Amino acid sequence: MKRLSRKRKSVVLAVSFAALAALAPIVYAACFGNITVYWNDGSSTACRSFCTFGGGWLCEV
Amino acid sequence: MRGLTTSRSARLLLLAAILGAGLAVLGAAANTDAALIPAQVNLPAHPNAPQYLQVDAKGNVFLLRGDTLDVYTIDRDQVGKPKRLETTMPPDKPTAAAMSRDASSWALVASNRVFHFVDGSLQSTPDVGWLVTSVALLRGTPVAGVLPMTVGQPPLDRPPAPPLVMQLKDSTWDTLIPGKLPQRSQAHDPMDVLFADHTVKLTSDEKGRLWATYPYKGRLVRFTATGKPDAVIVLGKGTVRYPADEAERGKAVREDLHKRGYTSNQATAGAFTAQLALRGLAFGQDGTLYTLLSSSITGGKTALGRLNPATASFETTPIELPGSGELSMAAGREGLYLATVEGRADVWRVSWPTLDAATWTEFAEARVSSSLGPSSAGTQ
Image (cartoon, rainbow over all chains, first blue to last red; front, side, top):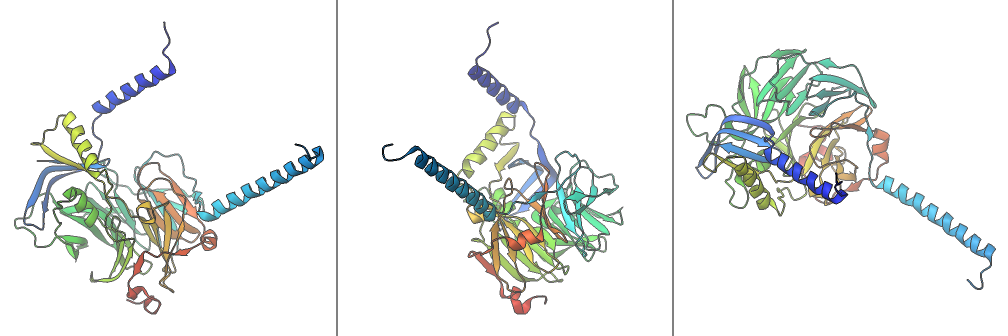
């Protein structure tokens, strides 16, 4: 069987990791139910659930 | 080379070697002098988990491990046998913790609830109702720093002003310090701005007075027992810094969620990009305030800052610490202790003689209110 060169191996590994990352679930740091923010302009934002994760936030409406 | 004898060449080579070695030694010494290098505290084998340092009135240092709720005492660079806070906590690890000055009680935040332990037993506490970012114990009473976001059943009427700090009083959470309604930013992600502007980390000083750190703004505020601000320290510009690629980072988060099947009708999302300005805060037994200034203020490596209550001058010295995240700090009898809150779980110590011998420079971008001046030291 023909052996892969070191360069090709690293390309295959990189593609595999990218595919895994795309499939991996989001790891939430914390989730909170029924969030409401009252802004100072009179408007408000309501989220059925609000989650924080590595570097970001998600508001499910 | 013509004109140089072999022995003369050898002597020159030897001289060059000596000079080179001397310069290398000088360079290493200068490098060591330039930044404090904390010593590692030996911890038992453990997984990565949040950890929180606290100190009692006698200067004994305690470490709470967020995965097991084991509380270790630390003596110099060794930990003692742990005592566990026994409870049926939710699976979420604590995001904040504080210990009373007599070491008899702990308050932990997990799943947006405050868990209050007195002499090891868990007390019943109601829901806070707002998103909790930090906790402290004032004369044994839990207080919680909150964001202007209600959690759970929203109030019937729009609140005129949200709380900033709440205190547990007669089994209910009351506002101790009022906050402000958040501004819906047009320039940045509004949720990013809300967290950066309104997040506070609470600490009680050696006299039991409450301090709020605004970690993204580089501001420290001291409050009276009735919740009135009576001293302010601003380090750097006092405003939040956002990176140049904040829009791209927000877009990347939204694209990632879209790939995972979320549509914009189901969810909105964004990135937290505000840069941390202050990484931690602790008070020495003599009242000296210690804080860690991140690279977003210093422009270089993390610096340890201190405010001497006798002189009210704020000075800094560089310190070698990995990462750029929050650190838990405690000023004990044997030195200043630092622990990572996120990522690889490490604890370090800088001894008092090492701190005294460090090169401290007055920090030009510090504004210290006059109430922290020498004539006001120790008064309230």
